[in-house]
Length: 360
Image 1 (cartoon, rainbow, N blue to C red):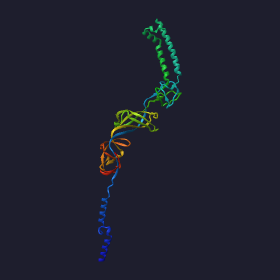
Image 2 (cartoon, rainbow, N blue to C red):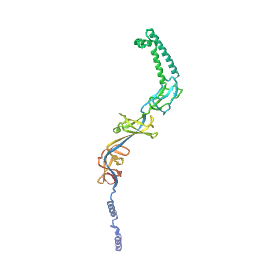
Image 3 (spheres, helix red, strand yellow):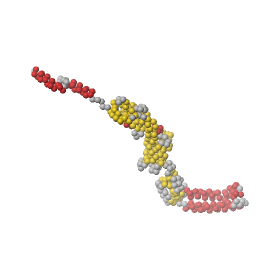
Image 4 (tube, one colour):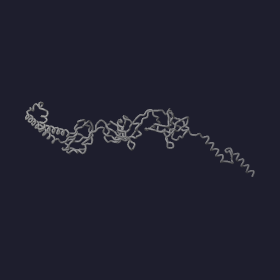
């Protein structure tokens, strides 16, 4: 028995080089774990920062809008008694002020005009007879008293003949439609040899001066849109862009919290009724601006980390206007702070950090 005890003692002595005790292995394991945790250093996050200073902020408001003609005229024939004789233009054709658009058959009106001219001549002869009968020389109308001349014209039918002739001449003029200004022909669908359908305009002339675009903005965006702000309009169908300026802001907020805005736009690629994307750009001075990557969420609130003495300190912030890449900070940060904009996703308050790309 003594031999076994001695052998065990020798074994423990020989192999005890790697063990602190042969009799308590669990205590040794717990001690080693604590030692490792103490020795391994905490990982320091690498971040990028920028110094917060007031700067120019380019704000962009994007909305959907509809194009309408700035000036247009719907043309119609005054009468539908005659058929359409000629149509001289087509849809999409550019026309000049006074250029003929279409005309009615004038045969009946021209005959009427001839008859009116004959009636006028007959009335003039009758006037001469009336004046002679009253002792006046019809060749010297200036010597005839005004009241006598007025009564003589009435009795001779001259006033009526002149009125009828004037009306016929006006109808002849109206039998030809002409462009009231330079523009483009639109909505021309009627055909020759048919009576004009006066329940709708014969055609529309859209003025060449430009187009209007109507769109809506949020009530909260009123503070950043002014008359004269530059506007870019992009057609959804063609992709073409046109430039313009804000011309009107309706001072009424509708039930949906929206405000109607109108812009004047120049561009040959826009059609009346076209759907477009509207971008209104405006520069705001002296704004505290951070990249969108600098703003993270903690417990559902917006937070920006700032670097101070090797640590990341979080600050609850309030953001205002935004564009594609940046926010305006309206509360929570002050000028001069060193904002962390990269490497901040997994940071906690007072996390140790090291700056690898400082943009002071």
